Image 1 (spheres, rainbow, N blue to C red):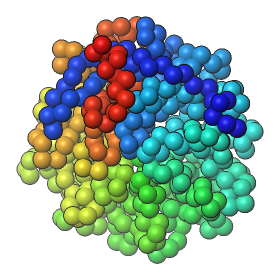
Image 2 (image 1 turned 120 degrees about the vertical axis):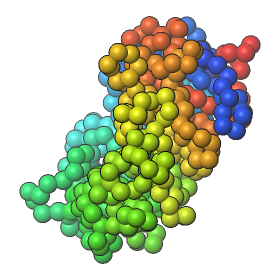
Image 3 (image 1 turned 90 degrees about the horizontal axis):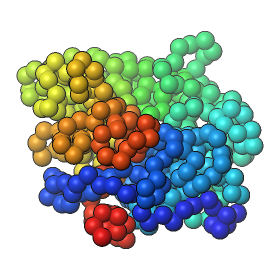
Length: 450
């Protein structure tokens, strides 16, 4: 298949609205925008499950809208938007025919996109495919070394890809390497579905990543989370309900070094060397592999943001694997003190900046997640998912989100209808916050400034 058969739209004005040029921590000009198929056209369905390339120029997401490229498929497709050229492309497509694509993730330069599909043409149940957007080639990633698809299918909500697109991580209950897993009948953590594997798309080899420090399989005891693979594919962050290293507490976050064959406990601190006394959740690793953000309750013993009180905590921590330090990310000051530990989903850049969501009481007693940014050394977290007046949007934001390696490109989903004054589709949309220097073609300039 060649690139000529790829279903794509060169819509230079695909972003038709910008709230403002914003002052960033580095005093640069940021563009805040909602993604739409074209000038005056809104997506005619929901858009969710967003990911940002580490290069910062490509955004991928799942969408039920069929007017991104004008296809006729009635379902969820994986979509890629090139912020530099303006090209919008249906990724879950072959021969001009769009099919189901979920949870897409993108390589650093935007060339490769891995996604989940349920399509008997590729194997039983859910399987993982990798699309080469340059050549149009579509390959099965959830395959063993012999090229056979995972016999029981894969986990149906998460996949991860390295920056060069060579490595793809997925989770399955099928035996992919011959290494024994957990005994039948034993419990597994929420979201878990067998063991975590990493496929080398260049050699075809498959390696188990959910491995204990003693070399044994986790026994279906770990779960793959978004933003799991580092850029070079060497490190994989995971959540495991049972101790993966000697002496660790239960329910902690770990990083597996696939080159050194070591497993490292990351949800720990100097005062809690064996791990938090509370369960960790949602670990995410930076593209360079140095930083890991994760969710943990303040009573877990990993420290307080102000050094004294649990009410100063957001519920998120940042582990610097190089420095060996763990920092409590502060509760955003716009949130009341009784809203401590209310932050959850996060993504982290190579400078340690963290994009995350927190429940925020935006009106009355309702609490919807809003998106915030924390930059180490730059003060308290600031809300990103704001209206033109600076207030929170009127709907949930940040159920999925992403940030690039430099921390200068961010993307998230939001159901708010009061951020873009032209938003009347009643559906979740994708928003981006991008520093101008990331883009060379500057399609936004045509849309907003000319």
